[in-house]
Length: 422
Image (cartoon, rainbow, N blue to C red; front, side):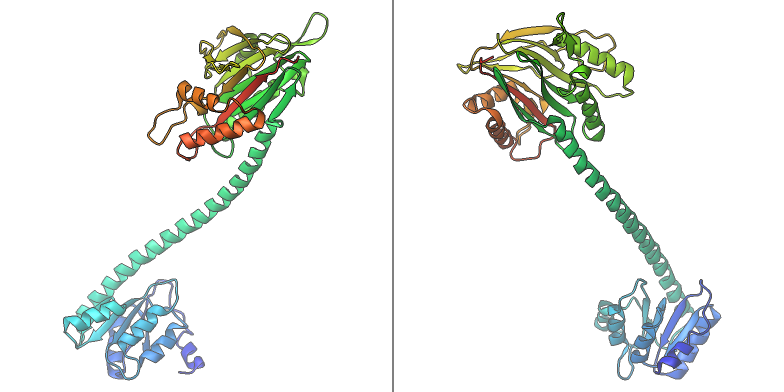
């Protein structure tokens, strides 16, 4: 059939709600009979005298339903059905084969190649109408499902775009958070300080740091903000500003001595001040645990305050490990909460370790936590190492303990090695 002749069939478009039925039969009389039924029932009918002609029509228009004879010269109904199913299109067409065959094997073969239903010739009008309506119900459900799938796909595509943008932002946020701890190894006259900060996700709620007030006095801290993710990371960024070594005048841990020199306040007083700041000035439901230590680099005297954070560990030069502190309350929970200081003295070769609960609560594959006993084992295993090498080996051992799984919580720590050269 010529293209112009084919296109003439569609010059008068049917209403949007009028479904198209393609009638395929080599018998003109049979086509006219079926078309008369279908037209009276309100369908737009297109006729084809062969499988080849029907396939050509399907290239220009997409029928909703097809009623095709099984036996035709050239391309019969089965081959046409196979070829039709191979055409790419967004809409499914319901395919009814007209046949005088009654063998179950033949019917099964027709279903296998893509037919949806069968009608036995000669065609009964009432049965034809019932089969057409059944096909319409199937098409309605199929198109509703297609539309829902389209909406789901479109929504998922939009979500992916948002996720990609969020992922890029989180990667940048991770860089910014890591920059809060710019130096992972700092040498002071009398002590070396190494730091570890590894969020469980892109960003986390842990923070570690060190700052100096003078040539003989430094502060170190370990903080764990409740929760994970962006909100916790923003909280750590704000807390970092209150304990910055780059801005001593804004550091709430600093104060001026009688002679005008900077010195570090009592750790308990600092934590109490931070507790008041969070409750009075920050509109947040988050809280944090914290351990702050003031270290005299000449005498080795260490004053610490613990606010719900894991106990600090002192590893003596001879290998003995001591856990200090009495726990204390978290920061940002209770107005007017008080905190206390406790002390220890470091001698040459002693080490002070502050770590978050992401370490002690790390679980092995069986669900058993590392606890302080496991932490002592890791500290002992790596006693000969210092600086960055210590934390590299420490993390290797912790990862092995967890069964090489991703950590469920942020992991952070501070190691102070007292050299006694202050």
